[in-house]
Length: 343
Image 1 (cartoon, rainbow, N blue to C red):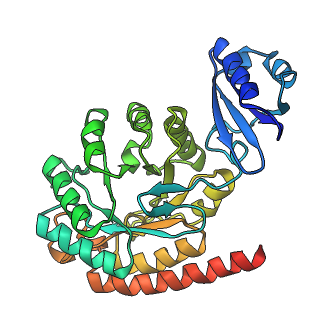
Image 2 (image 1 turned 135 degrees about the horizontal axis):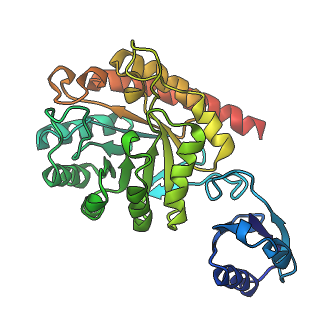
């Protein structure tokens, strides 16, 4: 349920409600918007059937509303306004378009810094790169570990671009958080609930990728784990799902982007690289994602894709990435102009 406060409610009114929730082993998450303040009640509220009536009688309360969805903090009912996450000078959500680009895996200092310079020049604002790589086969390259994180940090120091990189296990969260600006949770870890709890405790920006066969509700419930730890800096990432089709690596579910926006206030990023597995399909799916309302793109770029140790087939060259960025900006500006005109 959510508790909707009156416009003239005081901080004392809010504190008394939070204290009342604590007494029955529930927690309250405060969301203060321009027009209203709401308190999301998290926990087993069904064990306290009289609580709703009690809260309605408390000072400062305008209404108490039941939320039908199993995810509470991620829902539009809890927070109607879009979440905007600030990472340095980069804003994610709220109408801006962020592009995260870089190699699938960190291979060398030269490779990463060369790529960082190229993608920044083309308009990307966040550098991606994997230091820890989850791979289907144990015999393939699985990342450089902390050495890779140090290389990403050098690229950030030179270009000023914040970095996003994946964390694979709860034990690595502290290490990766020491270097990264955004923590990425991959599709295979979407339902690694211990890991979700740990990244939630960091209060750092987190990008949660949709699982290989996850429904949108399951995806949002995984985000709920992070939010329930008090971390409000969560963004979603659609990266394609597994279907019967074999021509593409995955099936890029563009419909998930507006669907997630309708159900949740969290920013939605699209990853057409993993969504297709083929470099020549990345630009058209990137354009489609932006047209569908994506708040950002995550794209794999490599100096020499044919020599990449990981995911070369879906990586763009510097030239192809630069061409795609021109088109992406045009589409984004077109749809943003329509939105502004409508308001």
